[in-house]
Image (cartoon, rainbow, N blue to C red):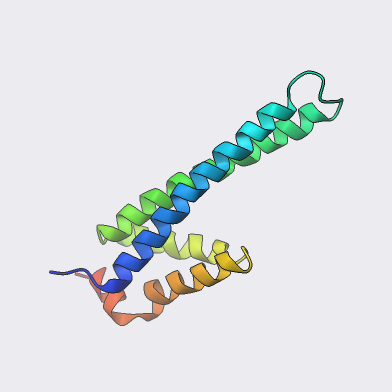
Length: 120
């Protein structure tokens, strides 16, 4: 059976988001480690540690997006639920993240062909 177009669209969007999230998370962590170097200033260490932690959180979400993308591609029902939750959170990323999240939510909730693919 051929996968509906919505499965491909949502999987690719999650995979792209995951790859970009990994790159962004690693860059933020690297920036945080740079600010923790000696000679940056008295507040550089705390700010660098905060950036490092935020980069780690972004990295965790990016890995989750990669897993959800694969789960949706494999038509796993857990991935549809987690994908809906991640897309609802993604609505806060105005404006591009909001548009991408709306497309994902459309396919995971409204599009009958995509929704029915998870029930087989």
